[in-house]
Image (cartoon, rainbow, N blue to C red; front, side):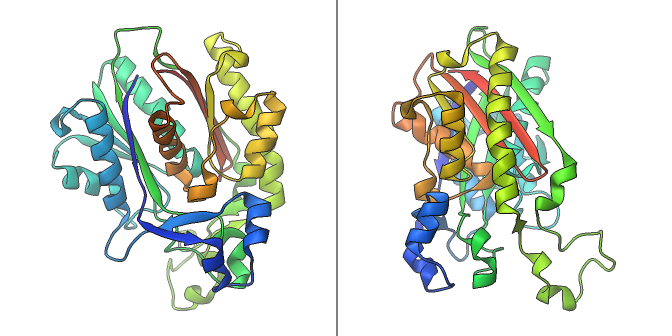
Length: 327
């Protein structure tokens, strides 16, 4: 079961008018295409692990546990602090729990749900009792803030969310189903080509001037696939659990784009109050978006004891996934 959640976002707020000063864009253009009003950027001197640590401490406290109760860490991110080792090891050191396992997951926007499914299997197998699952991103340091890169740069923000996954004696609550998918045929429609070991040598002075060092997204192509895969994988999770989608109390989709969220909601035939959205405040925080949204939904009272919640994601890879959870 999800025993506790927490999130943390940087204090620095960057609104659309701030971006107007950096590139040829406008508040109206960004709102119309994405639904984003502002996003958070990390402060100088702070890193991904710092965001993750704050969210983790809140989740552990919310679960009523001590840090020493955590016996495994799963860290989902695409913006790791260093090329290697993974940020999970740095989080483990920062939390002061040496010796426990730390697994890093790179499934982009689907990373948290993939991590939730992995944690669920570890718990059910009896291997671990309390797993700390984190989705944390620092996107603001890797974007092209010129007019050339505006289609991507205006979308992303920084933040972290965490959850403690624990054993439950109540078989009517917890993680009821998870569904994971990928299709690498579309990988280059949303990707960052450089740097990487596919290039020999991996890094040169010339690479710095290539557009491949920044994320690329074929927006229309991604939108088309997202509005198809989201409803499919949500329905799949309900079928796997033997439930009807109309029984859901709240759907928390990955916060990719408000237009995608609205299109998915309409395809599913759900009322607005049953689909959570906070993209207007934070933008797309990739692996962090679902746990941040879940944490806020609990704070707002939209998730309560007994609530049936569906988490769903779609992103680079392409990957897509869902999880059905009874709180």
